[in-house]
Length: 290
Image: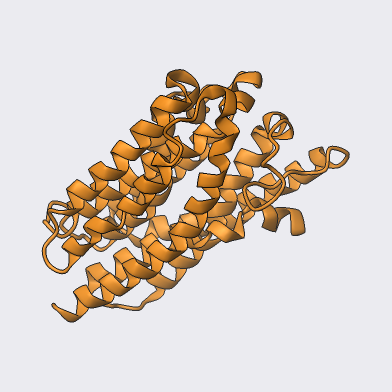
């Protein structure tokens, strides 16, 4: 159980459950029902176990060479018991995900079901053998972004929200840009480890320096898109900017010293908590102005 829990990355649970719950509540005017509760619980734990558990199992060989694995940034099974641990993680993924996914599929209409299936498929395809989207440069960043924007999109489709509304589409686009930037910057610190393991990523293809600059540009792009939001949502324009500032601290990083970017990645993890608080305050303010 300890290994399964570690594989689900408890520190990051909120990053997927929050978008679903917030999107559902805002789109329904605060409705609390079984769909909200079950959906939030699914995206809180089972979804994260599926996402990170599959990654831990099929990236094990490269993770052994990665000094940042084995703690808050990724579980690492003991080599002596890895095979048994990995089998248990995969079983736990199936047992916790299948029942809840089936329940959610039966809950919504066809579009909601298709959206959920695509979101879950992206989670599996990112790390699973043969598909391995994580080794397909640029597709890796988009898929990773959808891991987090996907629960929000599913919540909105589930309640039949207008995705083209001025208060909705900038949030979705900005969130995807934020997610792509975050994934790309996260890949910078692993450039050398990934190349030694024969794993491709956006960072191994264009290099650490170019990836840092691209990530900063995507964060700024997210801010520009959020500027379209009506008041008071437009205040969200400032939220991606600290991320851009954090990334630009490493604008001189090169492939040879890519591990130096790990300091910025750890800052990113804590910055998410501060940003989450500010997003919550902004959502409350938005709800009060309706």
